[in-house]
Length: 60
Picture 1 (cartoon, rainbow, N blue to C red):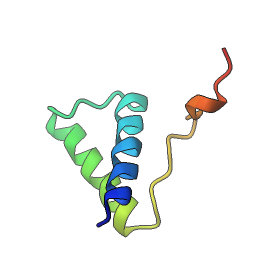
Picture 2 (tube, one colour):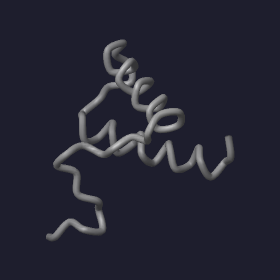
Picture 3 (tube, rainbow, N blue to C red):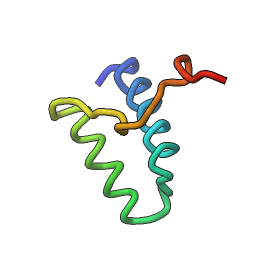
Picture 4 (cartoon, rainbow, N blue to C red):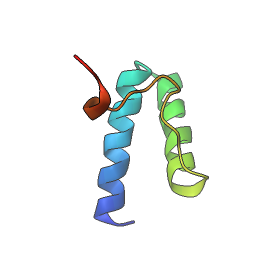
């Protein structure tokens, strides 16, 4: 895996943690993160949460 791919995943993962309010210390949340990571790298790609608005698109 390239450094660029890993960096993109870590940014996507941060978004997931924040949007879904995941706690990496909880086993259930760890399982969600692992499923998302598998989908991101080996599946059809992972989609952001349905209501997610990227930071540059948010209006103040």
